[in-house]
Length: 254
Image (tube, rainbow, N blue to C red):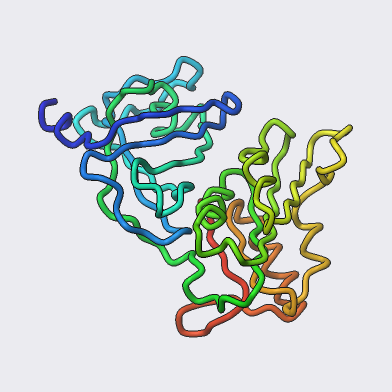
């Protein structure tokens, strides 16, 4: 266990429980925050011996206690924040990693990868283009990093966030404080919503989009992304890749 403890190179310095299944955490790495680009991700981890939260389902097969369980998450904090990485995470009762993460308290140690990586960034988007950032659930995380990055303060951003319940809408107060951001939340499984919130799924938003409006990013549920690709490509969008630049950028969360 001494070797495992030596691999725990970060500290949980903040935890906000939005619901039982959704949390925002901040992790301070011992080596400091690495340079990265908004939209990128990195892995965090815990040993198999870590305690699980009391509402977790029984494990069919327990992981090896002397191994680190790692999962990759998009960074929600901007690159200018050098005190910590922020993550927006969904906790699962059956999750090998998140059932352990859910039991952590401020001050606890965990593993954090030294390198941030990923290509779901604004690097290939012309600066004059508007950005339409579509997400479901915790797929919102990379857009929070993009929104808070000073390089986007003069850009026209629309953040579209789809969730099941009103209580699942994270970061709404922060998003509303940015004058250059239009906020379009969608709630699918509740009625009697406030006037600023849309009833339904984010797929309804795709029907009003055209390539002239800017670049669309999609992050979250693969079913949403598959449906979005189909609709938007039929409306003239092109999926972006390194070899074939386009105006539709996708990131599947699982």
